[in-house]
Image (cartoon, rainbow, N blue to C red):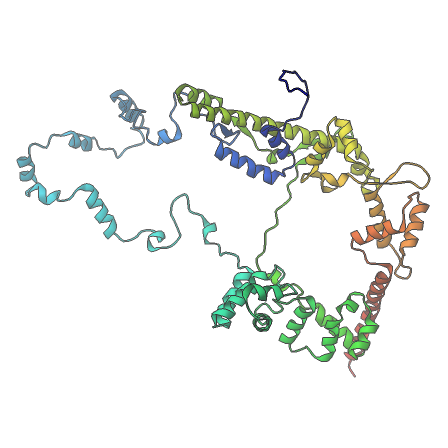
Length: 552
């Protein structure tokens, strides 16, 4: 087979992800907080980007800027105004400046004569009068003078406009720093301090250490016994219960501090699973106490702190800011609008770019500013396109879920990304990115946009499908309204839902119930019977106390 060379023309289509397209896609899925941080970085990086509507008016040509207005006695060239302007200004101020002395200006303009005449007038030599340079004399005077502000004594106060009271607010004490202060006093050996500091670094915000500390011993090159010894000392630190490996150990540490860790309480702490199930009979048998004692012991357990580390500073939660507002319209519909506070406003400074284009001569500088102009233009377009897309998707969601905004969660319809994407003629991936980390403020609360996309559950009679969120809400209503004497099982809930036209399986009901953190029917029966027993015993106890207080 002979090898030959030839030219061929081929036509093909391909999707190329340009940097600008990747940036636009990235902006779609950013939350308003992340978007603000991204725009701030671009403003610092790109000299052609500037804020829009930042509260400052553009300077009027021919008028001095605020900086120039502070030195209004001088023109742009640095020289004083002419005599006519000074005369006009002084004439306008004559009415307000009654203490003005023209003789002072005449004295300043008067010729003092030669050096000999000046020395004769002052009755001393000029070297004695002006022995130092003015700058040196001023510096020495300022150094010898008593401090007039708190900052000169080393404090943090200031008498200027930059005075900030927040600088005096004490820093929030964290759990790690609080334990580190106690560690410095508890141990003298450097090896034990190192082990203790390593264990303190492992403490989570609730105050617990990992259950298995074998890896810590391997990393530190210490024996497990040494780690256990240091951990036993750390568990005596404040707050009580800190550095525990599990809940039982945390409660046991606090009970030892209160001198209440007897054998009966130890048995109760070791069987917290029975306490969670409200199996009081089994707990009473294990602890070997009567009903009154087990009630007092459970009360003591409830007064303990299961998460002692939360008393100290932790990560601050960020307040949710809605991206879209939905309000009732005057015509009975719904008005959808963007939250303008979350939309960053940037502009491209074309005037600055035009001025730079006239002065820049190097090819590297020209290409740099050209790239800056292109990136700035793309960013402005991407932000505008992002806002339009969010508004379009939110409007379609409101149209699809009109029953939810009018009647509530029970009327939430099944909805998926494809239905919204087909309605607004966009791709499903675009709708998915737009609805990520975006929130909508409605008359029924604030919801994430993904909340309105729910799976469908078939109808038992072949009618319109039901939303999974609406079914979940109905299950919760049924359980909340159940009679304590007749607890609804999962099978009973399935029968009632099918009677109302919802075809659902038992495992689906169990899954929804567990997702809402609702216990099983057996656990709910124990809880409600326990609450009912406490409610019935309270009036009896109060009547006994009232009989005891009656005079004999």
